[in-house]
Length: 607
Image 1: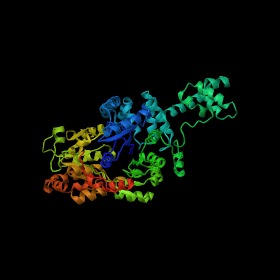
Image 2: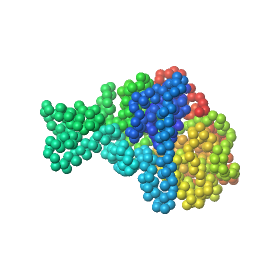
Image 3: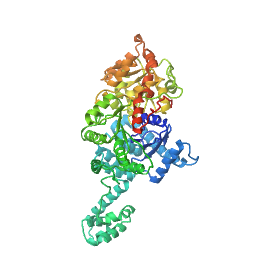
Image 4: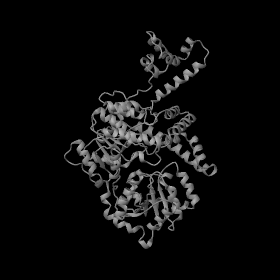
């Protein structure tokens, strides 16, 4: 499996666990996320990570050894030694990340009320560049010129050469095209600088070539003759640059392709796919993943989670002649905030590569219908964002996690939101609604995000700071318990785009697993199919703050029976929406790919 998101989605772990229960060896290749602990094992799933920002100094061989050590660990054959040094290094990096984040939050909180939120955000980023660079680098929705310029500025400010060069590369490339290796980027900049200095120099031409050997190499590539190679080799040596010397043959002969136009070793790849990667070369992360995959002894299936992992998954599948599974968690080109050129690029990437996929996993049948209409490709298997109940959980009981953590009385009405928060998710309207509602509910945000400080200030402005609580993310094994410790869950999303309108939100399934009534928009078609049909909560059109207030008041209207009126339906009918039931078609799909007669065992084993 391959995943390139900022944090690993729970569905990936559940899918892997399902396959592992049928004695399949499953491993995940992922990036280092800006959120989470970057674990190398989650619930028995070994994870090998490659750095997005090209700053990892661990060698390729060490990654391979680490991967095999993880596999051996899961098979019970690992020795007691090993891995401690790696864990210590990672913990140190996490401490640096945590310190930078805390510094950012404190500065933003102090300054936002004094100089305004936008200026406070800029100042906090300048004084906490490590955290800011990580967040900006992963913000794919930002225009590349803004993303690249910001990373370059912060990298230069913090003397982080790698980040600064990465920022320049971001500005200069098309989205989806090649990101040069860090050595290539630095080498190219040095060549440009050498040429600029040589033009200003008043030295004789011959001395210029010796004084600025990179400039000499650039001039030499336009020449022909028998003396070209020895003179070029001498200039390479005069640079004293290990990167140039390692490419002495190509530079001496005038080959200045700092990064190949197509991935290495394209043998066995169909012409049209080879042409695609020639026009849209692999970036650094994809190149590292390809090298890693080429050195594995055996891969039977490659499974891409999300569009960000599809390119490299298709190439691995093609080169090794194995099935490719594309797990499309979203309608990517239909997401909110995706417009213009970026929208076209996402659509074209998916449209081009989906034909090389043997199976496509989607969230629901509506998504399958849209993708089939857009791309005309065949085998779609629905797998919702269903979850499982953790060990010891009893859906007939209520728990006290939130009340104990926040020291709230038993009669307080608690409404929970879980997940990253931002204005795009209409958190501000939820808070304004809570301020207007007749029922004085407590809002509990089990959440994270750069805008947390902004929403804390909004709570003060609305006069609900004493009823608004922000809690850091908890381990997944506690999420359902937290959901079962409140009176209602809230999904504040509005149906403003097709991707959201047909979504099957993770939070809906977590509230269902917890037996907790929920509030949402009646315009979310798949939420309506379940919540309204089964009687699991309150749905109304959500447009502005008064709608959010009305939804809260309807949920807790004692004349209607309050939130408890939905509990019996949840207790009686929630099991059919757990992962055990929802994953049966997914299991059959893998049977087909693996040519297994016996269906994968889909026991709802707690994790």
